[in-house]
Length: 176
Image (tube, rainbow, N blue to C red):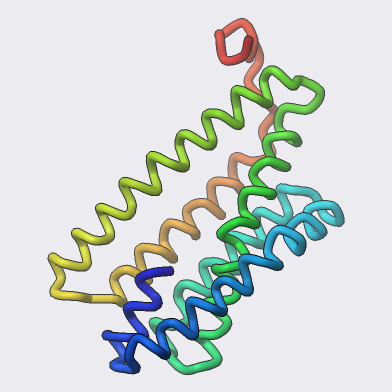
């Protein structure tokens, strides 16, 4: 999201005040995101909600690169704001779906998911900053990378997400 604010402020030349406006919209999205994603997961399941989340996020990330107007930027800010905390609800629900009735394995899976997320978030921040600097400030490349990452997550969940948990989950030392 910080790249979007910077894109608005410097990339589009609209200034910090306008960039801050989109940051506020991001915050509004973050307020309602967990409520909406939780309701969606309750209605259609965490897997379906996660697929919708990935698709909506990919669209919201790519839209400003194609059409950097007020409507696109507002939509992107609200959607990405909603899914920043909302995705946590969906992933927790997905872990529960993949490892039902086994709290010990759920705990391990959630720990792995949380640790993986933290590591990848840090690596992505460094990588995107490096890409941005190396290209002389190409915001569109950042949007493209974001869309590609979300599309990959969508495809992986679609292709592999219906699999059952590995047999011998406990025997392999993956749960206590």
